[in-house]
Image (cartoon, rainbow, N blue to C red; front, side, top):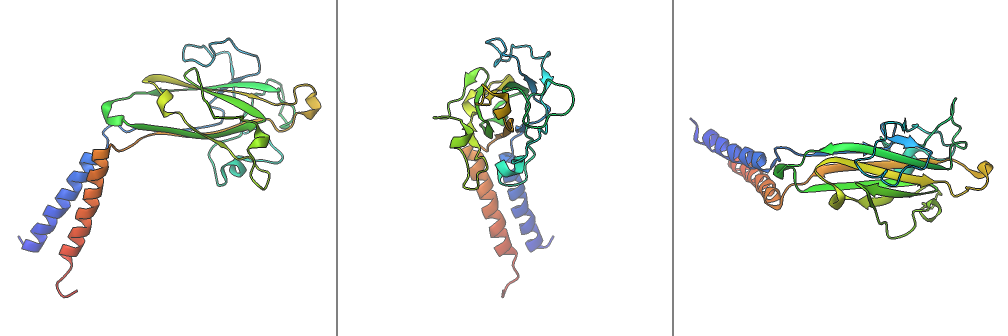
Length: 235
């Protein structure tokens, strides 16, 4: 066997071994976006509505995409987004984006089968609502450090600027529940309710452990070294 070819195989074998060791065996990669997969209601639910034990089978599918005359999900994201604007729609016919209920409650349940190889996790989301909202993760109210009112979170062009949430520490093994209570501030006069919606775009992913990250770096270094080693002499 040609020595250069044999050396090349050894370098590539080392690189592949490092990459395989660095890859989690059971990585978590979950995307969660607002849309009809969420459950919704316009009737104030029981106090335990934010937890996994609550039965939301009587709730509707959230209405999405909920029409909006001035804002789209892409306007909120600042780029193309898979998230849809959603709201609760208890009536018949089609909503106009101005005639929905002034308060809405939403739930989204998902399963996390956590193993040592799927940790550590990172769970983050961007969200906003017209006009304000509360976010709960497994029954815990998320603290944004201030008001979630839409008029306090706007871009210079007047479009909404979504709020950032890192809810990694609130996840649990098994069933998890994201719950949102959103309200239009114009509660007194239905004619003043405009463009109700909730926008949510989140992900839950496994991160490489520090040791795995070092292995990935080592693999890259080995690949660079092999490129130099394999270069014909005189170049």
